[in-house]
Image (tube, rainbow, N blue to C red; front, side, top):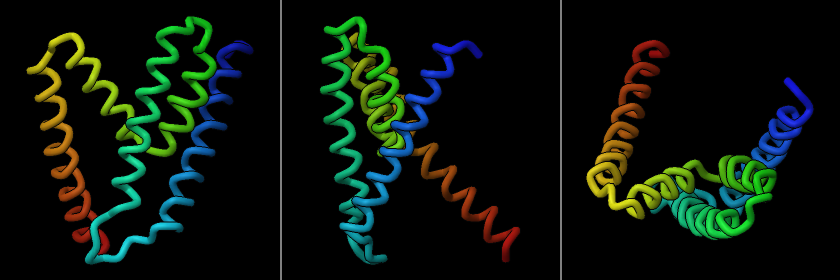
Length: 129
């Protein structure tokens, strides 16, 4: 791996650590009760989506912004919430009028994600008892 590639990995890793720490901090500040609406996760997903939109708009106007995209977009926001990346990808499909793709991706992500969690929970229950 050359020096530039290593720097990119470090930018993503540092940003990811900061984003994950930020997410953990929000979860401590807004604890989840078993019977309550998940406000922390909801807020993180919405805030991350807003921030990745602002970042993507700024990057589109700044061709030398790749290090910032890696650090803030992939790293910080990726560690904070992957929902922001999903939201941006869906919006990009909508912008190019790929409504079928955007709908399929959105509905498929939710259904497949829920199914995967259910399967994972069933597997863990079966294996762990």
